[in-house]
Image 1 (cartoon, rainbow, N blue to C red):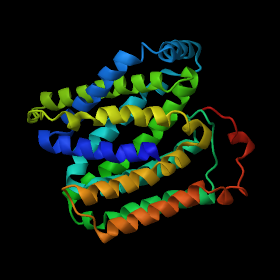
Image 2: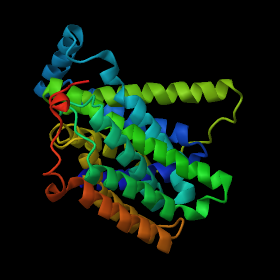
Image 3: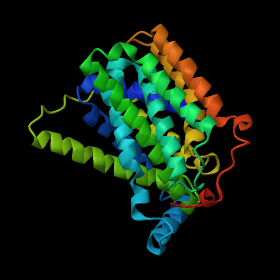
Image 4: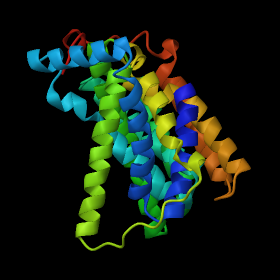
Length: 309
């Protein structure tokens, strides 16, 4: 829930910075670099940080962690870039509902064919209903966008970003389990995300796109990177115990409440009744997917228990 609230505030800051700069990728790279610098300063100083980095190196060398498990930052880069590109036009609440829809479907698939440390989890009726309800929430909340191709693209982007977050959560959980600390995987995530965003920006410039505008001087706009440190660090621990889908939907509580509050209290797109309906459906999805009452009768098949890949 705390991580979800952080994501809502991060989305607002990245969206505002992206609108000021006129380039969602450049603005996101700037805030990501702020977080990366902080992590480079304090993670090597922490005993748990140094020990965790050593454990990750050992795990990669012995095969306990595969090199592509370290690529969660690419998914994180897609998510924060989506914030910078979409939020200024569609609002935090709409972005959040769309991202939750993508995260729910992605979490369902990732949990079933799991790369997460908690092993595979079955695709039950309740979990499927939760994911389907999230997709319905996106359709309802974004119904005004279906007739506008430009706006539709801005709604589809956070759906893809949400699916990427599901993959990122699974990969981070695996690396965090090997490191026995959330800080080393958070540092690796920020490093990979910064490199991914820098490459994307370089490719855009090489293709002749207009260069980004001047970065604004207000320091609070760059706090999204700092918030991202907390979000990723918090996410690495519970995901290996409750699974990607339930973790993603559990974080929705804080994320949606934060998003609605931010859209209501700050300048930008106004909340529509459809958005509130979408939020309500998303809460229903959380109950369906996470409540123990709907899970008891559907145990995981023997072949799925304890699987790693």
